[in-house]
Each structure stands twice: as C-alpha cells, then as structure tokens.
Image (cartoon, rainbow, N blue to C red):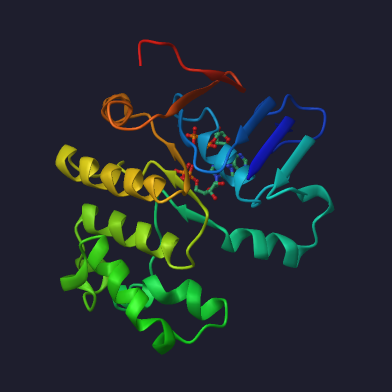
Amino acid sequence: MIELENVAYGYGAKGDAPLLRDLSLTLAPGSFHFLTGPSGAGKTTFLKLCYGALKPTQGQLRLFGDDVAAMPRDGIALVRRRIGVVHQDCKFLDHLPVIDNIALPLTVSGQVMEDQQGNLDDLLTWVGLGARAHAFPPELSGGERQRAALARALILSPEVILADEPTGNVDWEMSQRLLHLLIALNGMGKTVMIATHDLMLIRAAKAQVQARVLRLSGGVLQAAGADL
Ligand code: ADP
Ligand code: ADP
C-alpha cells in the first residue's frame, strides 16, 4: 500500500542534513504499525510522506503501487482519498455542527451528504458520538474531538488509516477506547499506523493485536526494542 525505499526528507536547503534519511518500509495491506520516537524526531513528517503531503527529497515512495514523484496533483488527490488521516491537532470548522464537519470530505469530493446520511449516522454511532451529532466542535471534550477526527478520517472508507498522536490529550480510559476502534478497523482489514510516544498504549495494543513497532530517532527508522 505504502512503500518507501531509501527515502530521505529535509525541510531545509539541499545541502543541509535531511531530517529523515534511509527510510525503507512497506506497509502491507492489513498491517498494524506503531511509530514512536522523541518529540521532534519527525513522526508527523513521516506520516505526511506516507499520505503524499510531502514528496521525498531522495529515494522512492510508492502509494498503492504508483511512484509519487511521477504522480500528477490529481493523482495525489485520488490517493489521499484512500488514506484516512487523524491529525494531531484536528481542525474543525467551529461554526458547523459535528456531523457537517465529519461530512466535509464527502462534500469536498463532490458527494451529496443526503445520499450518505445512513453511513454518516452509522459512523457517528460507531465512534460513540450519535448523541453529539449536532453539537459544535468547541463544545466537545478532548476524547469526543478525537473520535470526531477519527470519524472524519473514515468517512470516505479509506484502506489505510494514519493517526498522529490520537490519544495525545485524552485520559487512559478514552485512549483505550480509541485504541479499540483502531484495532477494530484493522480487524476489518484496514492498514493502520499510529504515531505516538505513549508506550503504555503500545503495550496495551500489543496484548491485543499483532503490531510492529518502529522508532524514529536521529533521522532513521529502526525496529523498537523487545522491551516494548
Ligand atoms: P514529531 O512529529 O516527531 O514531533 P515533526 O515531524 O513534527 O516531529 O518535526 C520534526 C522536525 O521538523 C522538528 O524540528 C520541526 O520543527 C521540523 N519541521 C516540521 N515541519 C516543518 C516545516 N514545515 N518546515 C520546517 N521545519 C519543520
Ligand atoms: P504537530 O504538532 O502535528 O507535529 P506542529 O505543531 O509541530 O505539528 O506544526 C504545525 C504546523 O507547522 C505543521 O504544518 C508543521 O509542518 C509546521 N511546522 C512545524 N514546525 C515548523 C518549523 N520549524 N518551521 C516551519 N513550519 C513548521
């Protein structure tokens, strides 16, 4: 689904040492990965590469078999619909109710919200926000926001879900609830990658699902130690 071959990425000038280098990884269909590493290590940047928001400065990145370097803009847009992203700091339009915020990707991709009402309602219920559909984003708790962000990432039925610190601002019970949703999605065959520095979360997940844990540090990607 997502294949990186000796990928490097740097925000700076060409001569500067890149932030990320020698990244080689395949996210196979149905796999479950964690991405960990200290703050500033490049986890968000790595996820941005994985959903085509950034192009490698070196190496090859293939999304669903196609090389992103050779992909036209609309090709990237199509690929992005197959990848649901849960952003760390999920941005909602505060003047629109939760249900409309979750439906935004539908509207943007030209689908009529009324045609999808059943799916929307099911999705809201599934993430436990059925009763909050008409609330406005500023009224949501941290856990509700994160579940709304997950629902929005799922609305186009993506094959891959990339989540950036999905449990960053929520308590343990809520983080377990989010984890269960992500594990359930993986059980439905979806490919999942979660960037987190929450080692407790990773341990809890490993007791429930076969997950590979990768660590970004010093610009390179390694398998995490067995102590995890
Ligand atoms: P993490 O998610 O692991 O905390 P990030 O990928 O957010 O790491 O950031 C890695 C480094 O890249 C940080 O030093 C950050 O300041 C820098 N960085 C992130 N985005 C940009 C950008 N758009 N331009 C320049 N530097 C950036
Ligand atoms: P996150 O917390 O999701 O890693 P940040 O708060 O670090 O995101 O960054 C928010 C936005 O600012 C992102 O689009 C990121 O790419 C950008 N950014 C982060 N660090 C820098 C930087 N040093 N210079 C320029 N842009 C940056």
